[in-house]
Length: 435
Picture 1 (tube, one colour):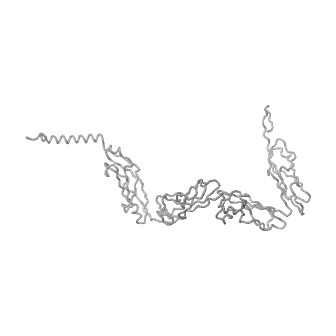
Picture 2 (cartoon, rainbow, N blue to C red; picture 1 turned 45 degrees about the vertical axis):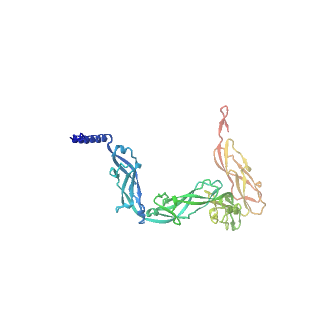
Picture 3 (tube, helix red, strand yellow; picture 1 turned 180 degrees about the horizontal axis):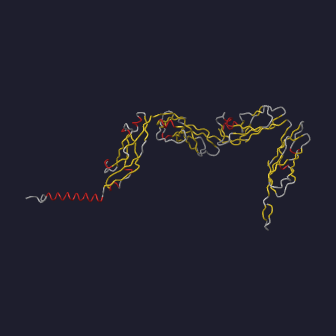
């Protein structure tokens, strides 16, 4: 007698198959297979040393990211994110066409390589000869120390130069290497960290990720940074500027004065160098009046004087040029400056505002053929008639000068007067009155 479990065995097996098919159908209806795109997945390059071993460097010339098309069940796709995928380019697999096939792995074990399509499927690189050159490093100072100080000297601890290795085309474009150091609010000499930056010959910054930077001894610089010793110098204001005059004017003429504008300058330097000046800076360039018969002005660059002392300089942004004015007059000539308040004013018009040029003093040049006593402004009488200034306008009016006996004017004396009507203001009754 057959066992009841084996009775109608074929029918039972058929029922099991049908049930399994029904389960698959239901599962596909509730959890269908779909495709999903994951964009901008970055490529990780490995085994780059295999290129360096042949004294080459590589440059990625294709896109550095890919698009992944993943075909899987909906329940699996819903749990995936871009970070679940790793796209790798192994440079040991670089072929003769300078392309590297890409491989993809997923952190979810239910997703296999067959479920993923990579676009593009390879990475294109360009090989270039590796080169190493030496460059001088310039220190760039950012910020300002405390008031009363400026940065005097900077010195890179690792040396004035660095060695940079990288693609030959990049090294040929390098124009300047700069170490930027921040000195904001420091009050004494310090050793500060500075970050290196590389600029091309047009002054534009260059990418550092493809360059290897070493110090002058060949040691690799961590994070492309160096240490800089910063020395602070003292700021000293109002140092007198003096100039030496040599030579003799033409016979019958004499030098009556020499002045420097501005009369003082502000310098930065070490305490010892500033103290040695004793409050004055004598210009290196001397002024010659040999065979001169008239006054003159000469511009002198102070930096030429300071160039002989490497512990002194002008304060930042100061104008390095001073004007030296030399007055030459005939023997017996003299220039006196009469205050306008000493002028005797005649016929000043009413209702007019008057402005004078020069505004403070009137230069009067006098000459004496004989040796006379010293003439002063008290010996000179000056008067002006403003009767012509009754209308608005600009007038050049002669000044009448009376001199002591034996003296004459060497040139006419004039005063420029600008006349404007006074503004009229209404009084309480609405009538116009003068302001």
